[in-house]
Image (cartoon, rainbow, N blue to C red; front, side):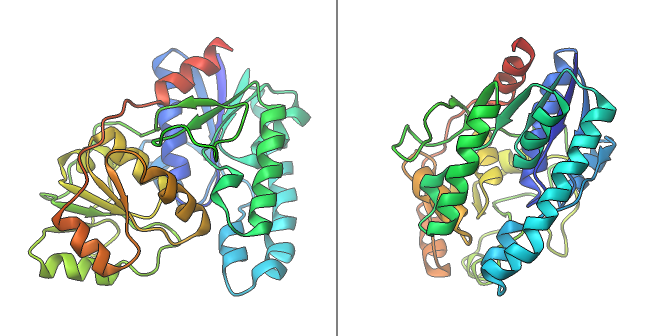
Amino acid sequence: MHIAVAHYPEGAGHATRMLAVARELEARGATVSLAGGGPGKRFVDLLGYDEYVPTPVDYVGDYQGSGGLVETLTGSVPASARRVHDLYRWLQRESPDRLVTDDMFAAMAAPLAGVPCYVTTHNAPGFYDDAVERAGAAALTSYQRGVARDFYYPTVWPRSSDDPDGVTRVPPLALDVDATVVGDPDVVVVPSTYSTALDESVARLRDDGRDVTLVGGDDWEPVASMLPTLRAADLVLCPGYSTVMEAAVAGTPCLIYPFTSEQRGVARLASRATGFRTVTSPDEVERAARDPPDPPVYENGAGRVAAGVLDG
């Protein structure tokens, strides 16, 4: 069976979680074709895949940046139409049996190309306090539930009233491949595309005698998967949900330092689960690192998603 796998281009984590599903599909005998682009393409390249790169979009950067709604309407909105068109043409060329994606635009292109669609994303309107973001997430969730044969919802938190209806809950998704453990990690700090204020937290931790491995820092060595390094660590500090999911599968306590509205929503829910705590300042990081949460215990949900897609 030939499965198309498309990931959203905002942040590297979208690529790693979909690569986790792609590799599980291959382990079950499927062939895969990849599309997505964005910061996560480096992981695609490190694992030796070729990937189609459609028109990029950056709703978070446009809306939460200085341009706000105006920049979103003049930047991301027209780029979205081009991305749908690009993905439609890609699906026509590849002619896959099915598509699995966390990219809303791939989910829009699939019906146009006549390809059965499976969605896997944690995004939900309950994360957002901003009315525009909440309305947009509600519309997209409703659309994707309607168009998808199944909607896989990867979570680390207990069932919540913020979870959307009509979805299939699965464990967190993590890319688990052989990779070098970087350094001798104690605290691993994993910034996201939109995090801007982790440097002081890193300095505080080092002043407190902690050995900090900063992903993307001067001494960082690119690796195909973060999971081996996170498994070897005593603590993880991150803003983004992909690293939260990887920490969950690694069994390593995690401090979530959110910067975007989606990250704040995830942190609010994830902090209800064992293994996670929300921090919002370097002072809180320093205190929480001295008394971290208990280790989380989760299975990797990538196999469940792959099996569901193949079983139809």
